[in-house]
Length: 115
Length: 118
Image (cartoon, rainbow over all chains, first blue to last red; front, side, top):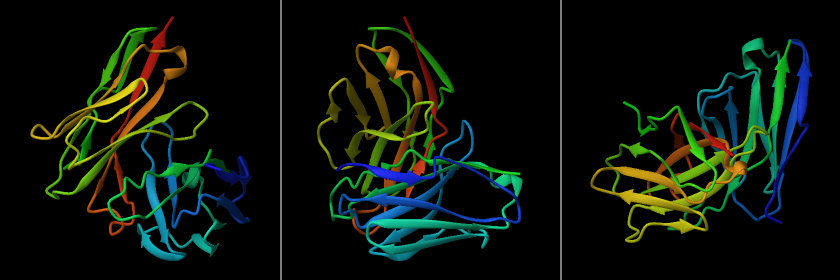
């Protein structure tokens, strides 16, 4: 299984809603990532989990809250978002082996619209 | 300063012809990795090819090859025999530091939109 899955595919939420994005991988990867991507722009790193511990937070506002319940799952909890948070949210995972390419495998993304 | 530069916002190629997408990078770290990803309009980022800074030979994966010129700090992607399905956004990315210690932080270029004409 060389797949990263993300749910939901599309999400529309109001600024007062609370929602969660889910990501799952069964490749035994030990690092998982959340990215935010605006149209025609490169992905921007938000968070990195390594061995289920948060290792990088790229100064993301607290209305985004990541969670890694186990090595296969990654969640992104959303609360009180702003319209400018509308974007494609991509999850990725990678092996973390010393000397290896450790390429990141991406999921299909969740297209989020904040009204 | 930009760490990854892709100077071609858009490229056009005729089906079955080869095309080169440019990428230059900037790092003082002797250990780094360079990646190319393809992103169709559906949104998923697809890993294409990898080149490590210590690799002596240019990487190849099927119709994809990476023209790695270390002294010039360039890592151009060559797609041979273009197909209509190659139409997509292409991102060059760099990971600095030895594997296992840098937590996989990728720096992406701005991307090149490739359009393949029949």
